[in-house]
Length: 137
Image (cartoon, rainbow, N blue to C red):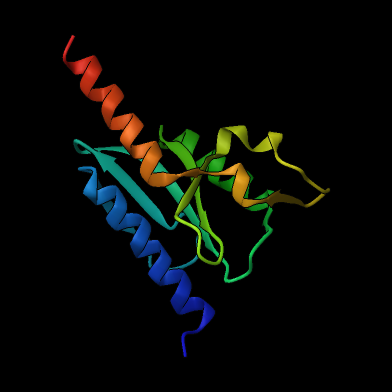
C-alpha cells in the first residue's frame, strides 16, 4: 500500500518528467521546503514549483503562508512560481501563483478545485509553440 508521502514523491517525479519531455532540466528538493522542484531552461532557472497531490476528488486547501513563501523565493530567484497539483484521476494541473488571489479563500487558505488549473502538458505545449514562433521570426 502506498503512503501519502510516497504518492506525493511519485507525483513530484511525474511533474518533473513532464517538464523534461519538453526540454527542461530539473532539480528536486529532498524535503518539504515549499519548493519541490526547480525547473531550468537553457541553464537558467525558470520555475519554482510546489507540488500537491490528493486522492480526493476535490478541493485542495493551500496555506497562504506557504504561497507567500513560494512567491517571495521566486521573486528573489527571478523565477516564476508555479503550483502543480492533482486530484484523483486528473491530469497534472498547473496554476501560476501570481494569479492566486483570484481563487476562493479564507483567512488562512486558498481553495483549489480542478477547474482552476490548466493541464500542465497543454501549458507546456503552448509555451513551446510560443517560443518556437518567437524564435522563427
